[in-house]
Structures are given as C-alpha cells and as structure tokens.
Length: 286
Image 1: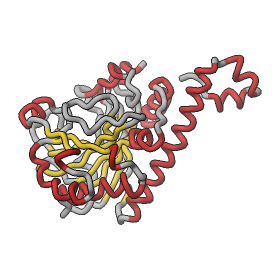
Image 2 (image 1 turned 135 degrees about the vertical axis):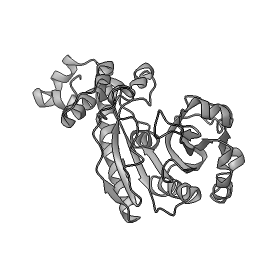
Image 3 (image 1 turned 90 degrees about the vertical axis):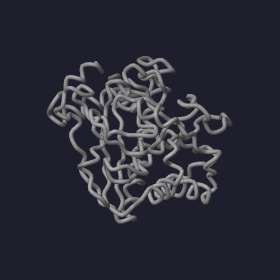
Image 4 (image 1 turned 45 degrees about the horizontal axis):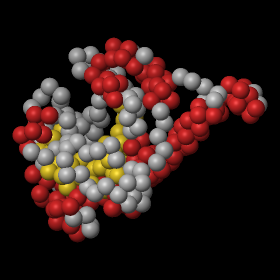
C-alpha cells in the first residue's frame, strides 16, 4: 500500500511531501485520513447507541472462514447463527466479487458490517423503527435522501414508514418476488447459507449521495447516485429479525468521504495476517 501523507511527514519535512507525491495524491491521502477519522467516529457512535439500548457487543469472527469453496474462504457477511439476541457485532468482511467493481466509489476490499439482533420477540416493524432511529436521530441523515428496496412481503412495514413521514408508496421500490429469489443478491431476500434455500426477507436501505435531487428509485438496481447503507431483516425463518449497517457506507452517507480501493488494501492484508490464516481468495486482491 502507498505511503500515507502522515507517514511521509514522519519521514521528512512537509516540503518533502510535495516532492514525493503529486498534488492529486496528496489530496487523496488527505481524503483517506479524514475518512478514517470519521469512520472511527461512526463506529464509536454506533457502539454507544447500541449500549444505550441495552445491547451487548460480540467479538467478530476471523476473516478466514475455512470454507474455501465459497468467496475464496473469506467471510462475506456477519454470521447470523452466531450472533445472539440482544447483541451486535462489528464484523470485518471481504468479497472476492468486489474486485471486478473496484472502480465504484463505494466499494472497498475490506469493510465492516454492523449486525444487530435485538430482542428475540422483535418483528419487522421493530427492526424498521430501530434502523430509522439510528439513521435519523443518532446520525442525522436526511429523510429526503432515504429510500428502500424490497419485495411485496414488506407491505407490513407500510404503516411504520408512513408514520415516520417516509411514505411507503414513494420510498419503497418493490421487486418482483420470483426475480429477487432467483437473483439471491440480498435485495429482498438474503440467504445466510449461500448454498441453502432458507432465506430472510429484507428491506435494503439506500441513501442518495452527492448534489443530485433524484427521486427514490423506480427500477432495480438504483443509479450510482444511491448507495446501500444497510438492510432491515423483516421476516423469514432462516435467522432472527434484525438490522445490518455498512459502517463505511454510513460514514460515506454522513460525510461524502470515501477512501480509494488501494488505500484499504493494506488494511485487508493486515487483518488476514492478524487472524493468522490466509484464505486462497486473498490472491484475487493482490
């Protein structure tokens, strides 16, 4: 991974920075440093919010799963079966398929998903209220920029969203159920076991970034003006109802900052080294 501006300053004077790095690279380093500080703030605020709700933090699992026949042995999602009720986890993840999409602003080689299973008695409406409380009250996200992608089974969420001035009819893009099941892309249905048939019904939460006034999406997938910042698990038997939030995506929604792909590669390799096992899929990122 390239030298950060902070590291170069440690090695020499500020003038040296200008001789080693072009102005564009310096700007990128500043963007990365600023993002990582804001990302740390996002994680701290999430932990505080969950603690205030009486939820306990669970330690993340290693990035290497030991199952090399899927995603190159890298963990692709927080483990639904391992996370108990009344708990949350901040799980580092990497997805081999993202290498082909690394030109997208909101794609990183290493990212963190915050998974949360509230009380065992929680239902989809409870999870929806929890997600909106976090996004709107804890992080001050603009409701006008929030939209959802789901399937017809999410109709039970209509009164909740309508009550929160997020009109279901205007804000929710409903995919065809058969199409969403066949796609297995988690926008409507999520399969905790990628080889299994049991699924969770989900409602993807999207946020409009940049200066555009584009209305909520009417076709799937949404345009690049929208980034998916999380999912609400609203039903199904495969795992408990709950929520998940991409910590980097939430930071991006809050600040407009995002590091480059290359600036996060070092963190991916360091995470794997820390875990002590190198899965074969890591070679895809080299």
